[in-house]
Image 1 (cartoon, rainbow, N blue to C red):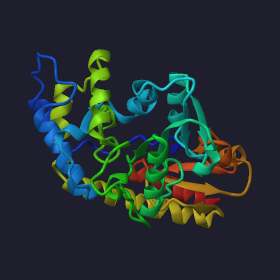
Image 2 (image 1 turned 180 degrees about the vertical axis):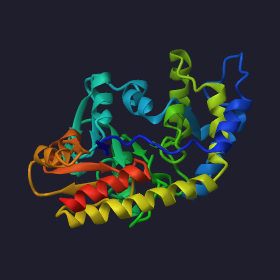
Image 3 (image 1 turned 90 degrees about the vertical axis):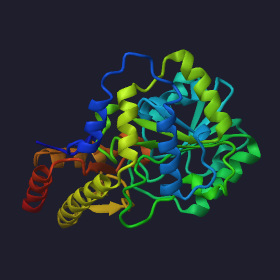
Image 4 (image 1 turned 120 degrees about the vertical axis):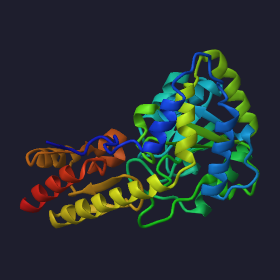
Length: 335
């Protein structure tokens, strides 16, 4: 079986990161929930370089134990409850809804904010590049979302974990459209895909210093602390771009091979201009497509996992070895 159903990295963790982890392995004391000064400086510097955002200081960043943890608990950490509404895309990573449920909040899957009507929206999730579709939101769309949210006192949270993997479009961080004013805006970043650190559980949130301070205050008491050796590894990972270039090239090759084979097998690929997935359809029920591929030894994720709007699509991950990607392409071509 060629497993293309889960976006888990398979390539080696960079030597520079592993070395930093080993050197920091003697860590008898409790680490800082806020992150060491060196880590906060590294995160702020990376955001400034990568997104072009201005005025990002160490009070605007906070390390987290993998971004999935923060996605799931953010509504709770922000104090949302039964009278509040969380909005997320119609096609979305399921944990956005899980987070709303954990907080006891109401939720709405909508691509247009006008669909929220008069509801008391407190939190708006955006995800660009998108998981599962690979869609990239243009800067003007990001700006409209921020303006809409500020008029209503809502928080905008942009999940930007695939920011480094733009193929047919250049992803933009929400921070870059704020003109240095980050009130009510947060962005999430991860080392899982960028640096093959999914096993380290290393990510961070950046944006409004007041929101960062509020999250820090709760996380201190909840014990949500990134281990000191992992913090050291994060500094090394965000300080090195060479390994990111190598990883991009790997995924670009795999994407080209898999995309060509899918098209040849009669699939239509939609969006997928960025990220680590191909969003594909045969204009049939997604489970029929899953079955057709399974008969050929290829496992993919049904689009319905990401919302009813994905009922005729499947999500196909690029996170497999060169050998496995080549095997999938051969099976598709033979079909």
